[in-house]
Length: 118
Length: 109
Image (cartoon, rainbow over all chains, first blue to last red):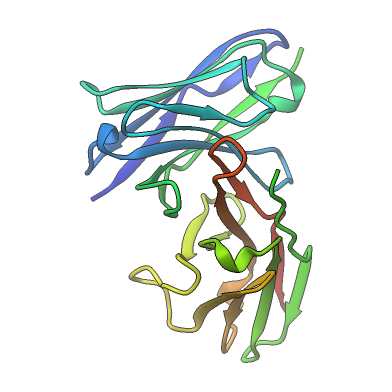
């Protein structure tokens, strides 16, 4: 059974850092594309970042230069390192599997809440 | 960057048909996916590649895509279908980004 479990969210001050984790089971992270999607309170879904099976990474303009997506193949885990956090980064962050660029995000985690506030 | 436009809300009576649109420039040339999200839950894929249904999704859910509009159709709407619905495409022209529509709140009257 495919499962994605996010962790690492919490309250952080503006300018601070946080690392989110997404532990996968039932499939191999490195053989798939893996993505982060966020949802600010009361708002819609916003794509954040993706890592391709080959290792290429891409980011939304809103996080480029501040966030870094990575994976640990030995732990079958996806990460999102978030630096220079801003109030507008406050959101629930979901990890999701996507098999290829045009494919759907077919499995999602339950999400982890990140709150950026002083 | 590529923009997907959805109506903020759609209302329908139980047993009737709901149609949720997703507009985009020549969206008919792209693969469109649809997600259902209920309050406090993660999104769930309900239609992929314009019109395919994942296992476990009722046949009442269907999709189409042509020209500048993709449509999610829910037949014989039930109270349990009340949720937010998002369309999504992959835009190869803008640095490999995934694009979501703004979402449509489906209200079952």
